[in-house]
Length: 462
Image 1 (cartoon, rainbow, N blue to C red):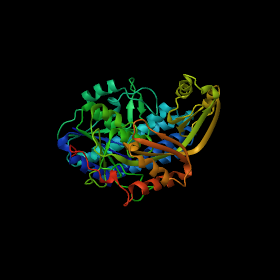
Image 2: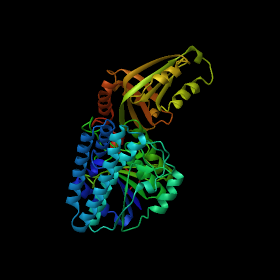
Image 3: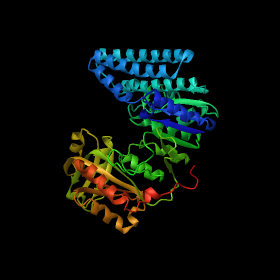
Image 4: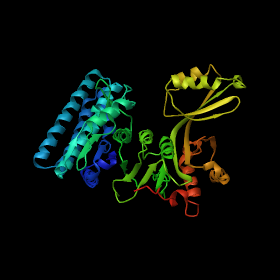
């Protein structure tokens, strides 16, 4: 069996949903489970609805709900007819009624907790999969719509819940009856606690849902369908000439995702690694393109791709007490752990530790706790640029080429991972795109030795 996941851009309107159903129809013999995100920018609009309701702005919230209702009902009208249209229209009416009731409650109390936010955001996937299932049945496909909250179990960390894999694996095997010739449609991103309270897996979590389900069912492969031809040598919004990487390892894909590549969610790869399930990244708008294969097998060596992420802050702790002291670093990191802040990069000297953190966080309490160990400085407005590949440092000329390409750009931090697959640099945020372009020109231009572009998929790739 296979899992096929479609992102919001792939289900943004009736035309694209029709394309999704075509792709699913071509794979019916493989017992497909279709995992879908919400339509287009629905999740962002639902966040706006929650914020308006919490501010007591009933009129704006209702206006946005009506806009979403029109989006989904128009898609349903174009994709289903007769009894099938009556069925999907009734279901959409019920869902929007429930959404309005929840939002009206928020308007009254003027508060939106993380738990309530998850309940609101879940409507995006519930609505999109309702329309997709109707479109599939209209085509004569034997299709069953399931609710992911029935079988994906998580903790109560609302808005960024962590799956209980043991419980989830058992429930998926019992409640997701994949069968050749039939299509199962389920929601990505949403889940539930042991008590049945709705949770979400964080933004982009639909990819994670797909590999969680695929891992539980022992899928032959998981396909992530998006709006690009696969994992690219760089973000195509920055590099016009970005190329598709035919094959990449699990570890490389995870590094790219974590350090800014938007094609797959950072957590996606872990369930696939557990079961050694290959993951394909493919283009819904260009289904004949081979895409990128992510697996444990990859014959390619050298640089695979570039990634970058902005909104980075450097926190440096300096203290002479570090000199020849044991346990000092562990105490520093215990402060970050206590405040539930994830650290990206770390560099050290005899008397300083510099770390990077992502996002606009309230760092006041962290800095206050770190100051008991030394003087603390904070530098915001930075970005991380990562070069990901295999055996990077084994070629002596590699680092020379990197810094030659960046000779006009100030590099604040350098981190070469011990796994030998990631060289990350911290630069000023305004220089990030310039750095990516310079590195792409150096390593992936027509005159460069382009290992990633010339690589062939592994022999077992299909």
